[in-house]
Image (tube, rainbow, N blue to C red):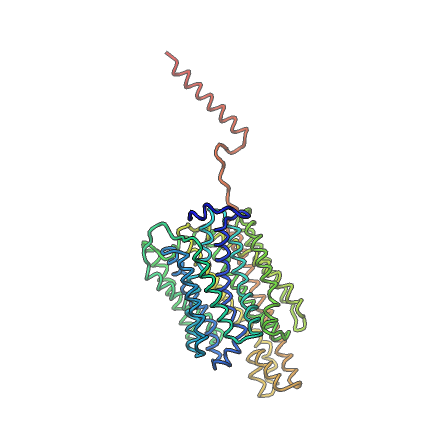
Length: 542
């Protein structure tokens, strides 16, 4: 900790240096997570302006996510070795430069490459934000700050949706990149005022571990992203999953044998670290799977615009932020187990409530379950992140933060794949019995998706309303199947973590106290006095 931090007067329990670190770190993590969702509202406009195909527009979004997921763990190790503030500033500058590329060219390949480069910058930023927060606080005093960080990270995607929707009300899709580049430059400048921190123990390089780790995550995330278009039985998907498993095995073998591993896998044997990583993975699996179907419900069933749909989901983010601050206090008192089990159970209850949605339920039918889900995530998110950071040595905080971030990205990819698969299967089962009775031109769009059926209905006019009603009913059936599957995952995780997660930590006994209280202390003192008297009497004997 720098001299400036020590001399800063405390304000509301935090020094000015601590406040600056928390503010800059939370804004930085909000920016890089908001960037993941910011382009969802503009993909149609980007496709028209650039001539991008459906697959290309998908990779404009997923190229960022893939680069971020792959590089976040090596970036955490670099932060521990070379300095976390340095990685934060460098990552923000890389992110800013990448975000200016779409202003100079609208070539699709350049746009995809720019998003991959921005994802690399985001990977440098994310683990640095959390590790810088935990290192400016004394041990055990960062729970509230971690709660603020978890709330910022949990609401970043929603803020990205709303912010980009507002920009598109007045400007083109390129204004989103202008806003992201400008915000990154401002935060990078603010980063120069923060204290530097790095590992105090020597650490070697682990190139084989880095390569196998990147390969394992890249192949897994790519397979999960591509499964929506190719299906689980596609040979490329099966080869990607098998290759990911092989790379994971090589990574584990490497990390257990090298002197200075990229990731000390023994950390996962610590109950707080392992349970925290598992909880974060499940939370983001459910959250992003839910986003996938809820946004479609709001737009295709209720007829909301992209901006209206993003604003409609905001109450969930408000609940996440508010409860993240409270749950940090629960963790201090009750440990990881209670808030995790309570949060995942409440989350599952909100999902089960969504099985009652109908095509004409209206916004209240969505608002109440989403708020309950937000409360559940708010209860479980901050304790999981706190447990990961608490169970890791300070010298490895950037790597621990990278594990936290990688768990989020992998969970999100799995959630999108699972939700997309279950939703598609449920939808197709709902329309299967009616397809043979439909006119030939209508069968393909109706069998494809509700979005394709909606386009057909807009072109055909009122006579296509029965087809639209059929597709909407089938979509809601698929939604019910999806939220039920996500709820089962949440409840299963709650049961497992209820047994595995640690409870409250036992406070160390103050000096001068003994078990049993004052009475036992008096007896011990009397015994000591008796022994001293006996020893003195023996020494006086002739």
